[in-house]
Amino acid sequence: MSDSDPKTEELKLTQQEREQAERRRAESAPEEDEAVQHERRAEKAHYLAKKLEERAESERRQDD
Image 1 (tube, rainbow, N blue to C red):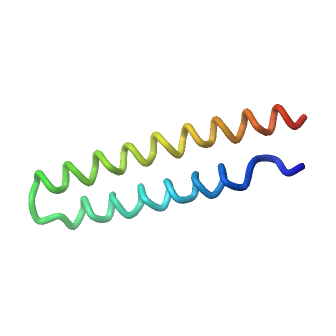
Image 2: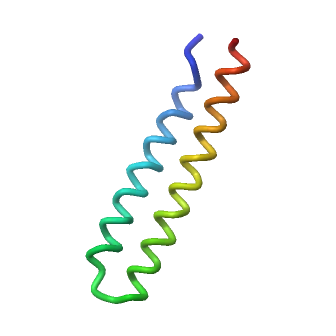
Image 3: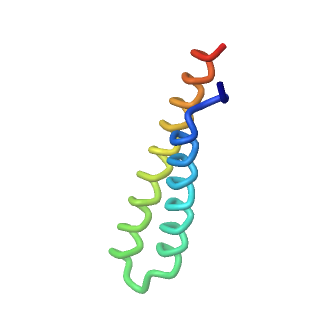
């Protein structure tokens, strides 16, 4: 069996991409409020990617 569920890895990559996109949007936002919203979304995506990494690690330990 693989190191982790492919869906977990795919979800993690999706969240990482979302985080990067939101940070770019925050940098180019014309309004302060809009920039703050994008930063919050980026932080949420970062948090979710971190949790998915923890899940992948748990799956790897179960496979061992």
